[in-house]
Image (cartoon, rainbow, N blue to C red; front, side, top):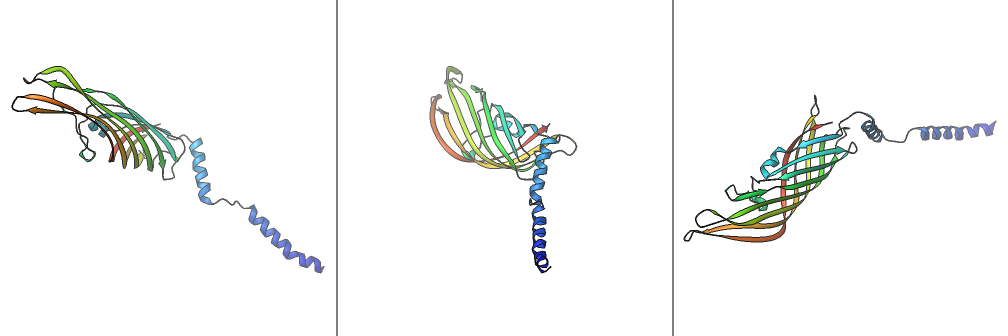
Length: 235
């Protein structure tokens, strides 16, 4: 009988330990994240977005973006467009606007964007605050006709070409409409721009009315700042 009484505390201790280990050891936050991931895979939510950036028109680019949500936290965004006339020079990084005068012919070029987007909130759709590293390739080309002393144009032209490769780090906020799949996407950030430039400069001698042209080539890297707004539709 005494041996049985001595064993009772040990039995009670073992029962308490087994009850503790039988409970789910996962914290609630992990359960919440697992539930979001499961809903992303099973619920009919927005995972694809087509977007445009109307403000880039003034910078001479017309891109169309496609964003694909890979998980509820990560998406991939690619953009393809065309560069035309640059209406807005950015003096902070040494770029100038295209000449609007006669004798300048703009040559279209393709542009490319590719980015990974990391959403900071907990949402099963691609919306909320995000951080986005991005690579961008831009090229602007124009042919400048040589002017004769009488103001006309000769058959000689000079090619001005400016190629930019950007590494950007953006932060933004994307929000879907409450009543439809339309959305807006605001962003800002900084980046490093690698430039390969062939710049044509035109000068005139006021005495002889003779035009002269200089072609300067250089490559460098400059810091840049970026801000913009995209609008799009999700499905």
